[in-house]
Length: 112
Image (cartoon, rainbow, N blue to C red; front, side, top):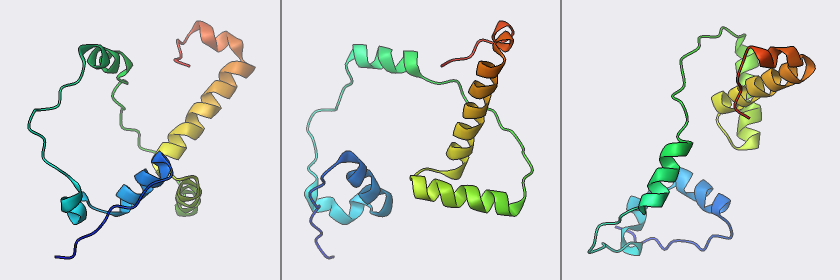
């Protein structure tokens, strides 16, 4: 088996892109086993629980194939998934409508 050496990364973004396309199994020699198990600090765990987002619900939306293809192209260009991008667009539209029609706030409690 060929030994691979991990490259030096200039940023977390560069490292994330690297791991999107590579497996840690190709770099086994670069990692060491630890003796003691890793433990999160209780304060970090409490913070994670507080910031945990509500589980997403499924929505079926029929769209023209070209609309989905364009969304995928834009998402790839922006470096995110197309469904994530479309959720961002929906949220932008919702915020814009609430801003235009402030009376909507009476009926909804949006997270900002």
